[in-house]
Image (cartoon, rainbow, N blue to C red):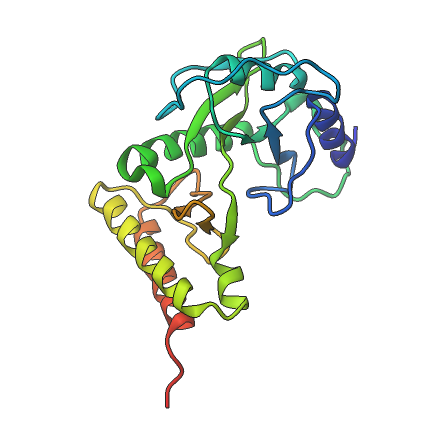
Length: 236
């Protein structure tokens, strides 16, 4: 099965569609999709009311196919309206000679999820809420779910000329990175597309690198300096 067909098949199984402004990998056989926690299909009975929001993931979710995921998440007591399902489905590996240079492997997604958990424990609101790893019935790690952060990117704020707001958000990013570095945790991919100015007022860092290297801390500082230069007032 081709890569586009694989993504379409999984989305159809789960009754989900790609959301505008989706975050994360789109290459290889890893995809990010938004999953509404409402009725799976038009005309279906509503799902039970959600319970309290979890502060961090507490369980592993095992599913046989995508259609089970929304029901399982609602049963876990989530009260978020939408979540992100970032997945790697081994059975959908592209055929030989498909011309795909790199494949995002499930161990990379697992590592990224574990880093999100660690980062969320340090800075909470500045990192998307990790919900749960998702396993196949054979206990293979196939992806994870996390909070979808509604908002605009720092890049979009800059492009729209909203520099005062962008500078205010950047100061929050600087403080967030300082807290992470103080606990020996680096992000590794700080750029204006990975900073979300959330509609609820939060400033959120998304998509940390799965496997940071020793130089990642320096990379964070260099990225911050680069963004600061973009936001500097024009010289007179």
